[in-house]
Structure formats: C-alpha cells, structure tokens
Length: 419
Ligand SMILES: Nc1nc2c(c(=O)[nH]1)N[C@H]1C(S)=C(S)[C@@H](COP(=O)(O)OP(=O)(O)OC[C@H]3O[C@@H](n4cnc5c(N)ncnc54)[C@H](O)[C@@H]3O)O[C@H]1N2
Ligand code: MOO
Image 1 (cartoon, rainbow, N blue to C red):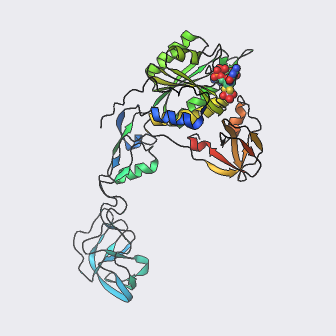
Image 2: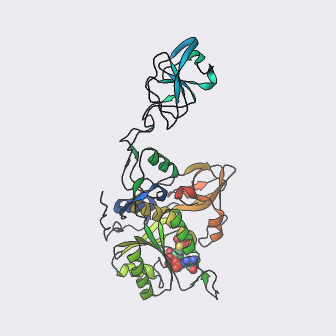
Image 3: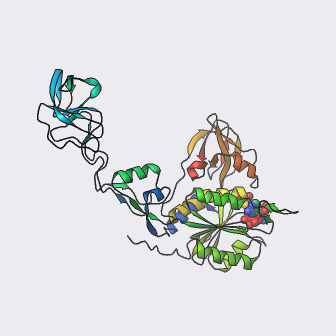
C-alpha cells in the first residue's frame, strides 16, 4: 500500500454564505467533510506499535489456536463417554505444549496430556486430571463426558485470513497480543501527526521567568503540548510569539514546514492586536468561525501554505474547549484514526442553571455521588476550574432550564482523549 495523501484544499474551512453564527454540529460536520488523512505510512515492530494508528487492515497469517489443543491437564481419548464408570488403558508417552506426541492413540485408549498441547491423532476429548484415578497404566473415571470436552478447536478464536484489526485502529496492548498470536511481527502504521503549537501575545512570559506588570505566564502552551501528546500526536513546540505580524508570519512559515497541523492560541478574534486572524485573512485562506458556542466563540480556521491552522481563542478555558470539541476530532481524522465522537452520559444535575437559546454551552464539571457538579464560575480565564473539572457538561443549543436532578449530558475528559 502506498500512502501519499492528497493535500487539503485551500477552501477547506469555507463557511456557507450569509450565516452569522454557525451551530456547533454544523461546524463539526463541515470539518468532518473537508478533512482527510494526511500522514504517510511506515512498518513498525510490535514493540513500537502501541498508540499508533493502523494504516491498513491487519490480516491474520495464522489461526488462533493454530491447531486443536487441550484446555486442561488430563487424559485424552476419542469420543464422548456415557454415564457410569469407565476404565481405559494408557498409551506410553505424553503430549505437552510445544512437545507433541507423534504417534496415534488407538480407539479405547487414553494418553496423558497437558494444557496447551496439540491433540494427538485419535484424541478429540480430554478428561480433567482432578476427575480421574490412575495407577500409571490405566485411568478410571465416571461419565458422562461430551465428545470434544475440554478442548479448543483450531481457529475458534481467529481463522487465518480474518481481518483482526481494521485500518484506523489506535493500537492497544491487547491488539499486540492478537497480532503476535496470529503471526504478525510488524504492522503498517501511519506516521504520527505532527502538531505545532504557538502561543501569541505581548503579555505572555515563559514559566519561571520574571513577570512584570501586565504580564501573564503562558498557560496555554504547556496545556496544549501535553494534550497533543495524550492524543498520540507528535508535538512541535514553536514557543511564544509577540503580537507582531512579521514574527508571527515567520513562525507560521516554520511551523508549516515542520508540522501537519498548527494550533495557535490568542489573537483569534477581530481586535487590533488579533494578528492570527489578520494574517490568515491576508493569506486569503482564513475563516473566522463565529461558532454558537460558549466558551470559545472566536475560532480562526485557515490554511497557511497548505497546512491547516486552528486559531484557538486566548482564554485558556476557551482554548481547551475548542481543542477538545473541534481540533481533536479534526486531528484524529488527519492522523488516519477517523472522526472520534466523545462518549457522553446522561446523569442527574447537581446544579441549577437557566440558559438562553442560540448557542451550545460547555460547563466545567465533575461527577460526585452520581450527580454532575459544575464549577462555581463560568469565567473563561478561570484556569483553576479546568483543573478542578473531570469533564464537561454539554448544554444543548436551545433554551434550557436545569433544576437539580434534571438529566444533563456529562462527557468525561477521558472521552475526549484527555487523561
Ligand atoms: N469586543 C470583543 N472582545 C472580545 C470578544 C468579543 O466577541 N468581542 N470575545 C472574547 C472572548 S469570548 C474571547 S475567548 C477572547 C478571545 O480572543 P483572542 O483569541 O483574540 O485572545 P486574546 O485577546 O489574545 O486573549 C484573551 C485572553 O487570554 C489570555 N491569554 C492568551 N494567551 C494566553 C496564554 N497562552 N496563556 C494564558 N493566557 C493567555 C490573554 O492574556 C487574554 O486575557 O476575546 C474576548 N474579547
Ligand atoms: O471564547 Mo470566550 O471563552 O467565550 O471567553
């Protein structure tokens, strides 16, 4: 399989004409329809495979089990046995896992057999050793015992030629067991999606540096870089860029050369210092997505030299919500893993809230005593609330009046791929 994905189109992020506020679901459907995998493929050994995205269906080379074998330690013979006492002479020798018995077991005779051993010719049934008495010459036991008892059929788990794992699968440790058992030593996986992160703003300083009046420490970059790692992508840290169009343009050039996707934070809305949106607009491939969403209204989406840019809002809460809700499924698609729908759960609310119609809202939330609590403030700069939360409550686009005990949709952070 050769994987040379076509480039994304420059009008990737075009919005329908005349729409003022795009509902979240429409925005997601647009992204889903316009993006596709952009990463190439490489073969890796199983030890390098966990967390990688399978590039093509994996096919079993060998059946599991490869041949009929015994599931227990005991005595093997042919056919079932009726109710009552049975005595069978033992053939000399035994069958063990990896050390097969090479002869045939004649009808009416039995052989010592150990768990995992291939069934010798003339054996299709095994009696558990705990259920027999033996003097080393014969075995005695009581029936009934069904024909085939305590054995495993060849291919009862997986048959050679079966698709064991579909393309797009993010490989788990269990998948490695399956691949190995069915004869695969290497898997064709996608190259990791490379995601560049840029923080923008004159006010930002690096953690650990002295911060003067009006300055704030860069909170978004450490969060976004860690998040991208948890999503299984490769990070490209582009640092902080001042509110200077030339410097930002240069950083975007460098990011586009090194990454498949660029995440910026800050400067996404349309103010004087909102250079991300201004630059993308100048490049002619920018859309200000005014999404009917709180938090995270201004999302600047554009193409910079063929590389998609997610211009996230600067407020850390909005930056995280936009990343989880929009950037993550979009990046999953580009990484070859398909579009991930976060799994939510209907749970009773532990809070009261009245919301107007017209936009989707995400509240920082956590489950306690079976009910969803929400953070005391909805302020989009309240970073402590992100840390406090263990997920988000999603309130629908329409009006909602929520009383304690009413059902609400809780989406754990883990469902968004965040640990
Ligand atoms: N006139 C309007 N003003 C604003 C609107 C609006 O609709 N009309 N929307 C507000 C909303 S909502 C948000 S969110 C912000 C988003 O704007 P920007 O993306 O242009 O973000 P900035 O103005 O650059 O920053 C906003 C805020 O976030 C702080 N910030 C930025 N980056 C970081 C970082 N890496 N670490 C920590 N904090 C960061 C920044 O200092 C600002 O306080 O716009 C509202 N305004
Ligand atoms: O996008 Mo803003 O977060 O709603 O403050």
